[in-house]
Image (cartoon, rainbow, N blue to C red; front, top):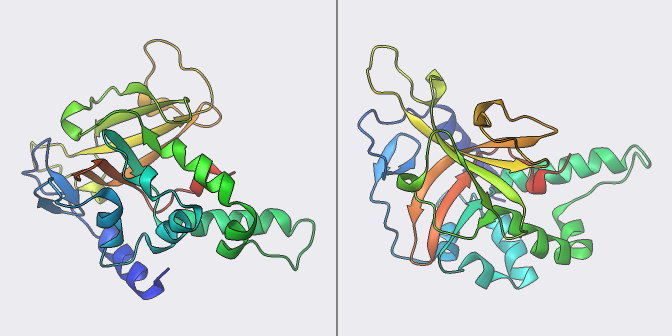
Length: 229
C-alpha cells in the first residue's frame, strides 16, 4: 500500500463536493464528472489508479490467481480499497492479541494462511448482473451476490453536506449504497433503516464506472474487508 498516495487520496475524498449538475449515468470520482466508459478491463483500471488505492488488493488477487474473477463479463464489482484490507488486519490483530498480546495479523498472514478464503470470500462483492446507476432505485432492490447471498443496492438522495448537499440548491445529490444482509428482509423494507444484525450498509465513494468487462463501484474507505467484526 502506498501510504503517501493513500493519505493524499483521503484528503481529496474528505473534501469532495458532488457536482450539482450530475446526471444519473455520470461516473463520479469525488466532485468530478467523467465519461463512465472506461476503455480498459476492471483489473487494469484498478491497477492504473494513480493513488495506489488498490495495490494491496490486486497483489492478493495475483497471489490467489483470480484475476479472471475481477474481469468477469457482465457483473458488477463493489471493490474494496486497500483501506478495507488495513481495517481487516487491524481488527484481526485486536482479536488475536486478546490471547497473545504480542501477535499481529498482517497482509503476509493473509497470503500465508488465508489465500483460499480470500479467493472465495471476494465473491461477496460481485453481483451477477450489470448495475449502472441508471438501473438503480432510491428504495433499493434485492440482488444475489456470487456467494448466492442477498444484498441490497440503492441509489439514494442525501442531505449530508459532506456528500454535496446544499440547502440553497433545488438539486438533491444521490449516492449509491451496497448493503450486505445477514437476515432476510421483510416485504416493504426501508433500506435506510437496515442496521446490524440485519445487515451492514456501505457507502459507495466512486460509482458507475463502465469498464470493458463490467460495472465497477468502489466502496468507502471505512469498510472492513469481508465485513469482519
